[in-house]
Image (tube, rainbow, N blue to C red; front, top):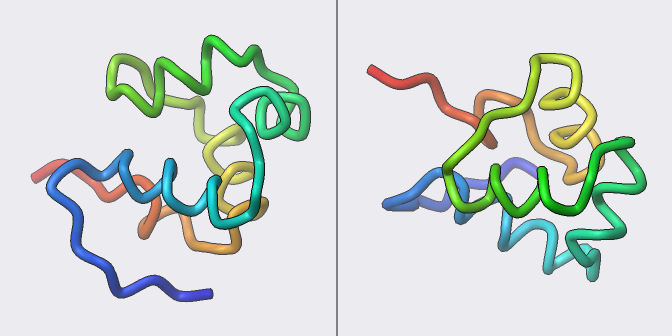
Length: 73
């Protein structure tokens, strides 16, 4: 599912895709083996995933890591 949406905040895409998959923060956290608090922190833009976890999240949400977590210019 290649998303062509534009977002003011990149983490909004993660939130929207998670909700489209009908996943709660807790369920996504369980899938990728992190805490629900970590998902909340990443979605709020206060933390970032390690590269391996970012890959798991992108795979779970069916997007690339570049779509989900664009590089800062």
